[in-house]
Image (cartoon, rainbow, N blue to C red; front, side, top):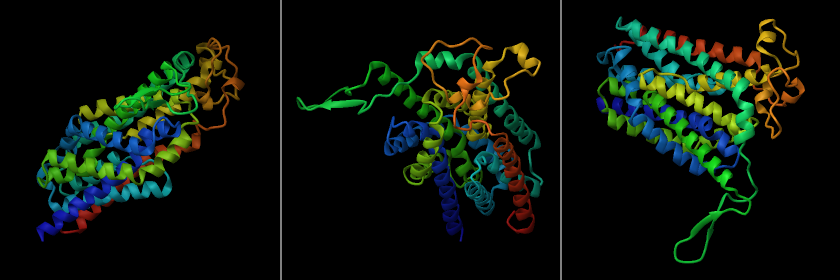
Length: 388
């Protein structure tokens, strides 16, 4: 019976990791795939390697938190681990059905907290520290995006805007026994360098996804001493990799087609900020949402671009052109950058919506509802079911 339950636990962990791979790969590699910087297969391969590196290094701290600090390891029986992983998987399914980026990390914390409440073993100090980071992280993301959008983005875009030529980036000569790579027909050294930087940043974001998300799939098994950390990281990587090579092909396409309404420069800025917030939190052992930081950085970047139509004193008086839109981060320009207060609102307009107040309210609501529901249902399950 124990061996059967152990197999069920492994399958539950793989199911969670598989879904994480599907969603996280789209976030990390969608912009690059959408811009045709890399194909989906290569993106999935780089995602898998980067996730492993993130999980093997920084991710161990998050595994320790989820697997033994929110509740003691003794609370994680094999049955309890299966129930917790089931709630994480169901939370992801719920999010996918409604198209809302509910955080896997937040759902996992909620499910484990429900176990702690039911067994009277919850470490409330750790939970409140985690919740504090959930509040701080999106605020940091928003204001980093806002400052960059208002003061730096137009200059960065003018200097470093990524120009993409038609045709292949690199071609390979057929002379000699070893093919020699050369620049494509229209490829410049600047394009090659900027493309390499974009790919490195996507790997960095994948690293942060591994650091924060592998724990969500395997921490209950580690907490219950059903798997060692090394084996758990390997299992999580394989599961996420399977998701990256399969269902992520669709999410990379959908995210890429949506996010590349942002120019690649803007998407790159968002990825750096969000990945840094997530990596730092993971290093501290905090389970945190990569999607949460990403979305709020996009919102901040767009808002910061829109406020370039007004000076600080204008903003303090509430005087900003009513038709200025935070869609503004989608604009690229090769012209001289106007000074703050001199930029026109019509120059910032674009068809894509970076900031839809109703969408932001919906996201924030689900970020609150997701872990709350997971906590409540987990608590009721462990109170009713004789498995603790």
